[in-house]
Image 1: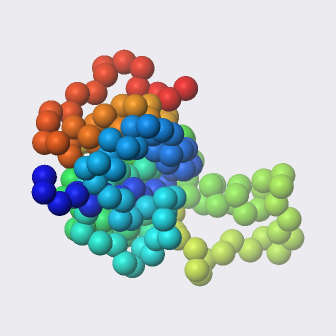
Image 2 (image 1 turned 45 degrees about the horizontal axis):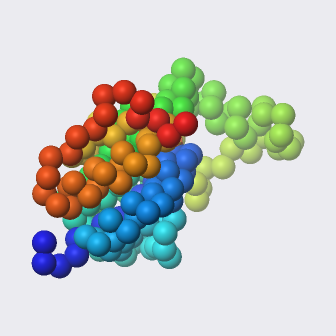
Length: 183
Ligand code: SF4
């Protein structure tokens, strides 16, 4: 590859723990940076969501919990040639998927009114200026096409680093069949 590939990361409905595993690339980061440059990431650089460049590879954390997640996912699919569906939340819904045991009304009432840490005597549930929850959490792959699933909570740093390097070299990506989690 003559020019360096353009790569990025993004988070949707997750906890940002998957991004910590990217920050833990350690010396593998040098292998990645030999082949690519980061152009977009809410963690690694000052990123504006309305100024996403064209990307060769995008690593996406988190599933689709709300309408903002969906809008961003659809926009990112247009921008990225190859999307790594990164982490258990992105692949399956993960911890946020536990919200599927309840209705949206139950979730918002618990979050804004009933939770022990909330003081909301007027019982206001905000509706403007906040993303709206969808009826259920969906894995990212249910909403946009994804190109590679890398589950784990979070995935092991060495696994995703090796996957990115293989992709950038045009080599087959081989994931371990067990022990994908970085814990
Ligand atoms: Fe957080 Fe785990 Fe979901 Fe990653 S997979 S966003 S670490 S809960």
